[in-house]
Image (cartoon, rainbow, N blue to C red):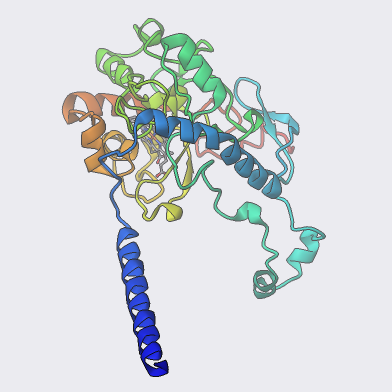
Length: 360
Ligand code: HEC
């Protein structure tokens, strides 16, 4: 009897082990890491939206805690350093040190010691996206408001907000200087350029090709988070985003995103939008140095960056294929005449002219 019981128990244990390992194998199979985003969405949009909306406060709280731990985000404007239209540049060291540490003390330690004791200031580590596992385009509040006012498009995301304080961002709206018309100075008239006003502001200053290029730069096209499908992060179906929603007035508003070229998601770096001023004197474009011309980058932005480097999703959400000769090229021409602000104290080689520049 005892022996029989033992055999039965042994048999039971064995089958349990076999079934547990079968379950874990099938779970492992479910967790296969893919380069592709899901195309078929299995949940109704309203459910996704209400779930994500309810998680939003927690997401933002976590991100603001991380930022405040790493950086001093207070408003400390420099007295003498201002942007072209007068917004002060922030001053002072903003990366925080670990509790009880001083910069001198850190400088006297070896790199190995710093690493072993975990004293490397976190502020110099890659900055995560406001919600890194989700990623995607995020616009500062002031830009969302202005675009809504001018064009009716709403760039609000229901799942997250922009995270950095306005005083760290470029002045808004940024001025526009043209290499072709330095005599005019700032041609923006203090306005954010959109479909609403580009023609009125630039007719007679740009040639017809450039005007068409500018029109395309301020025209919205579908993108991963802003599109008309159920796989979007805007409350209402969206016509998309424009190039100048990030590179506002050919410069930047500090909007953020993740690089498209890296997988898996946690390895993708957060990106700050670079200015397009001076692209005419660049030879390589993008953080991976993958683009050789401004026309290549222009095509790439919509076909790849807008959809996280995933052509399958681009097909689903509405890729806008720019025709090289009459669209990408025209857009490239406009970007190529965006100039730096005038710097009368620099000489022809870009160095300070000691005759004009003071010591401080
Ligand atoms: C989410 C905001 C966003 C939108 C919208 C956007 N860009 Fe960009 N753009 C970026 C970021 C971020 C980079 C930097 C990418 C990198 O370093 O790899 C960039 C880089 C560029 C560059 C290269 C600049 C350089 O100095 O290397 C060009 C040119 C450019 N964008 C043009 C465009 C055009 C044209 C469009 C519209 C089709 C567009 N962008 C739409 C965010 C945006």
